[in-house]
Image (cartoon, rainbow, N blue to C red; front, side, top):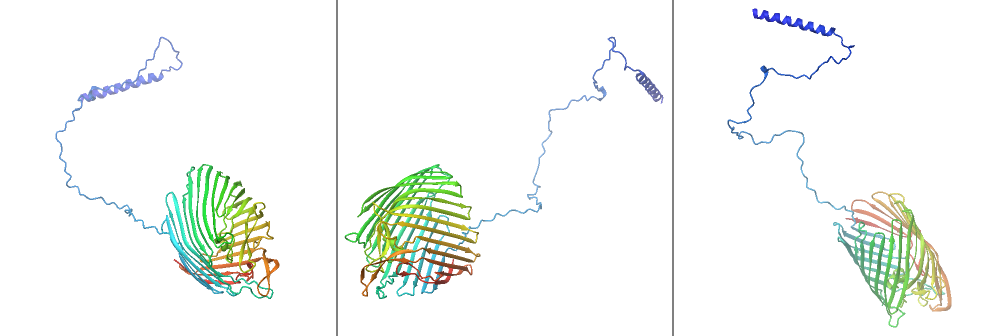
Length: 573
């Protein structure tokens, strides 16, 4: 107790002394004290010093020795995956099924019948299940019989085709047969009004043909591409009499591109033999042609300039060598909308029995075959489009033609035709013309198109360009009314043409110097057709020709059929 009393007294005394010293410090004001050299305030940093009583005298043991190694056992841990239900299920990989080619139903059978004893049968099939192979076949039969005696027509087509696309080139080929039968039903009359064509003989043309082509595939990313093509054409063509034509033609082109510059050549060799002509001693004619067309071309985004020559050699029974200029320029004043183009060219058009009889199947025997020479053809025009809905082209030209071919009625048998030619090396036929084309797509439902030709001929020896109209107009329209209903329409207009006409006495004998220039009146032929898909596979169709029932003729004495209608079924698969 005495010790505690002493401790308390000492503590109180110490506290009182501290308060006294603090009060004295507060009373001392040093704000206005001047700084003198004889007085100093010494201040030093605080240094905490621990008393000896709180210091740790034992240093730590850094040897980190372990007395024993525990033996661990994992046998009691279960081999099981923790199942946490997060709401996500395992993704199942689905096997991709074989892709199915879109079925366009290009395969079909068609059968129809109509007035004039019209019978139509048609079939087409193609295998299109592969991206790089396509092959198929086709067959067609059409026959009609008009109101005139022996006014008959019959047409057949049959063939097979194929295409194979390789990495570097594409191979195409067609083998087929075309047949066309008719009669010489023309009705020339004598001065008594009686027909001078009592027999009305039958005529039949048979055409067996082959076409094959190998073409390099286009590579737009290769600025230095080398493109090429090789083509073979062959046919054996004959009529019911003694006329025959056999032809084998090889052609091709080679073009080397280096950015905007192109250089290349077109080559062709056509070996042609004809039997039944009257301009040779034995009735046979070897009419063959070889040509080469070297050129250079500068092609940019808005221009295309071509310079070259067309070198043609005619050989066989007649030999001739010609060199024609070849130049063309195509320039865009407003790209895609308005282009101007022009050029000059020339060449030789082979006289072909097959080509002539396709134009006029009433060509008589002992015909005269010659080649037509385009001595000079200067042309120019404009073209362009407005988007994908409107396209147009207008071209004017001036030609000088040698041996221009025309059909005239034979003087002895006017129901047959002969070939006559006008223009020679010294003086050529002058042909001036205008061509115009237009294509309009009003919407996805309506498509319109048309072509206009206006021609003017200045003849040398012949009085007129026989059977050649000075104006031709062809127009077409297609209306996609719905996915099941389609309507097509066609219109054809031919202006006036002229033909030489002769007079015959009561016995059908030609009256000398009784020549007349007959006018073949202009005509307008309107046709239309419709097809309705009743089901996925079955459809019905109808086709009407010469809807205005116009009596007209393309060649003198051979009137066309009047209004005729054809209808039937179409099965697609």
